[in-house]
Length: 232
Image 1 (cartoon, rainbow, N blue to C red):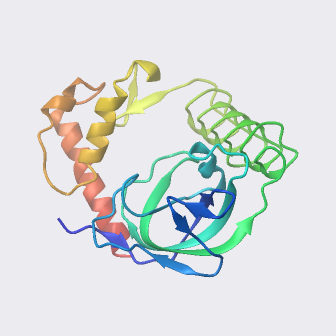
Image 2 (image 1 turned 90 degrees about the horizontal axis):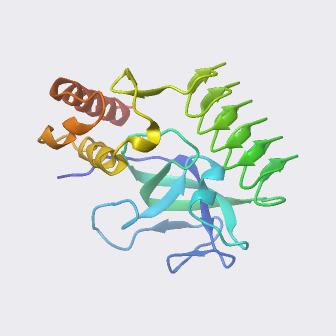
Image 3 (image 1 turned 180 degrees about the horizontal axis):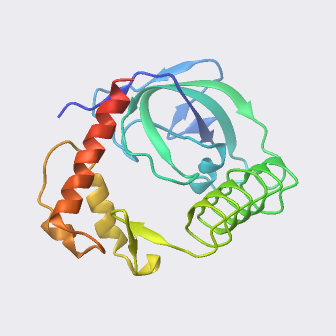
């Protein structure tokens, strides 16, 4: 099946080791690098990887000599966007624009008291935004973990001024705790929905709130979203 690619350029961020190398490739600022094979792009297997947010690279690199660069990416594989700063994509061509100054304990901002933050005045780890307290927040003024939005005082919320954790699956409140979900099964469903091909939904009916109609409706929406993205 032919892969759907975004021509680009798309701005992103990529990390390398201290010698500006990644997976055996020696990169240079100002130079465009093209994949040396015609195989399909595949995350964690074939292609140049990059993150949407500069703090995302710290989810994949832990070495102290890690360097971070702003990049332009071309022929980017179309995949569903996943909330969170660690969202990454894969492309066939990549150009290194400039190096990002990583200050303190891998912060790209100032007045941070945690690690690997992007933004200012964060307390915690892996935050993208400003004034976050907690870990893996995307947005501003969040207290807690894995929030998307602003001024949330809880974990895993989306929106504004939330104080209670609410997990939604298939557009409905889920009464199962996040840690009790079969995440391997959820991942398999997500990967199946990345294709336009129809598939047997039976194995995924064990997921909370899942029905045949809801899974098929989600898959249809995913296909429509990809078509809309490709038409831009």
